[in-house]
Length: 196
Image (cartoon, rainbow, N blue to C red; front, side):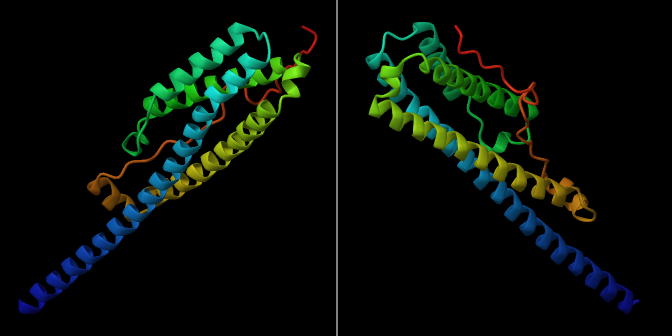
């Protein structure tokens, strides 16, 4: 009888230690997702901070289409008003809303840069060129950080779904994280028309 008790205690101790190990590895993986998310937010903030300077430079250098500038200003306002923190990374609706407003801002900026092609004096402005280069660099950084976030989320999601970790993950409250996805229609090349 005593041997059975010791075996039971031994198995229970192994399960406890294994559970602690699983918890620690999942916490580490979740923190990697949170860190990757912080870098995504950092790059979006960098872009949002560049936009007022870009708009002021464009307004000062040309009699620019006010509708285009207004679209950029409104899109920036919406993009900065929708925040998502690391706790919401498993909320598909919040994540989708965040991604949509960031996509709208990207679209407004793209339209602004296409419209600038009609203004040679603006293209020659050194401040505008510097801001445009910074903005293009930031868009590349955003793309890179979104890719890194998706990789971290994929690694975390895989861990919490693999057996036997999945049992502990559900008991400990770990949930899958959302992924950034391509915008609807992104598979089609945009149509650029400089004739207008």
